[in-house]
Every structure is written in structure tokens, then in C-alpha cells.
Length: 147
Image (tube, rainbow, N blue to C red; front, side, top):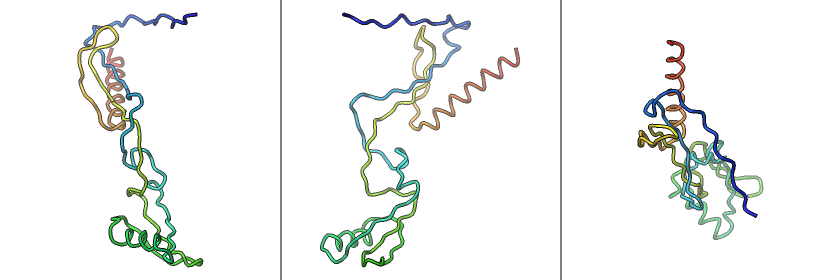
């Protein structure tokens, strides 16, 4: 048995193809890339985090030495009641995890479903794409209000 999608129903636009912009989001399938904490909305990046280290062990001494000399993160340090060293890291900085995400393309092109007039802009940040879209919507509202 073959299942087919229903035909696409489109409203015929009132203006010429060049009067329209198409906003699109796309992400390749099965592709992951390294991503910054901010991009993936990492909880540690957003609110800071705490790392407990047992300096009575070789591993703990190595971890503490790395944090103190090479981690390049802002933190405060104190000795906890259990004898563990507690490192409190400030928010807004890269955590120690390696994040991965699917890359997303934020595109704006000229034209509509009738014809692609080419790429106008390829945004790298979602906020820029949203701002572009909102400005375009405002232009449409202003033109409608003018008549």
C-alpha cells in the first residue's frame, strides 16, 4: 500500500514574485557540530556551577591544579565541611562539557513559492533572523496602513 501526501494548497499571491521574501530554517540530518554553551543554552553557562574535588587523591590533585592554573575560568574556592575542595564558577563562561548541536541555517531569499530569486541574506544567529523577519513584517503593516 502506497501512502501519498495530499496536494499542497496555495493561495495565489496578489503581487509579483519580486515583492515577496521567504524566510527559512534548515538543518542537515545526522550532522552534529561542536557548540558554545550560550548557543545550546547550557544551564552551567546560564547560572554558574559547582565542582567538588577530592585533593586527597591523585585525580583530585590533578583536577584542582588544572582549575587553578590552566582552566581560564572565573571561580571562587573554598574547603567544604567534608574535606573536599569546592570550586564555584561564575555564570556566563564556558563550562567543562563539550556540547554538540545540529547546525541550523537561517535563510532569507527573494521571491515566494512561485520562483526563487536568490539568497538575500544568510544569518548566523537566530536573533538576527527573527529581527529581520520582524522588520519585514513591520514594513508590510506600514504599507497596508498607508493604503
